[in-house]
Length: 298
Image (cartoon, rainbow, N blue to C red; front, side):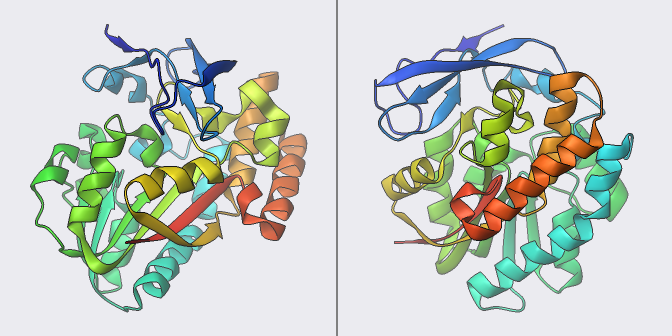
């Protein structure tokens, strides 16, 4: 298997990097991966990750909810119970960001297509990209949606989309800079880009450390702080106009992290740490467990 080792930060290119922790893949392989920190942009990244052709096997698990729609276990059932609320929030962010009730939407990394289906019902023209064969199959079975393979990103027509969304996807993309360059090409001049990523500066990340579920190695190639996101997007002439908290993520991530740390589903401690993260995120979006960056191209 071929692994990727970075001598410089893949986010900003600085050589001012050092190891900060080692995290374990609790979902598939039980392998451990080092996470490095960049002293220049404050971004983090996973070292020795499988290349784009070989990382697919690390997604082959019924526990990987965005591909399988599994309801197995209490944590996944809780995820599904709040999904209607999160889908509505995402739709509202798209409508507010674009100023449109209907338009043309591209969802990159659409998984099983729940968000695309929700937007289609609201009258939007939809296009989805998804690298995983099983997830694309599930999207067709569940919602009648046929996402395109992710490689089609570079074959889509320029300036077509009023909104482009990436819900917990950017941290998975091997060609980080190439993706962002192409997104600018595809977005209409007044279009809106919405990117949601985990935030390693959140209270739940600080509490759980290497057990923080949103490190999700090796699937998460990068681990962003608000500052590193701003620097990355600025490099591509993409401007952050607003930030939104993903308020429920702290609960889900804390419950998973508690399980990783203790080996048991300890609901009360996980809920309490999720609640603390939720409260902090409401006061300061830059401390939320996951942050949505609403952006425009300059």
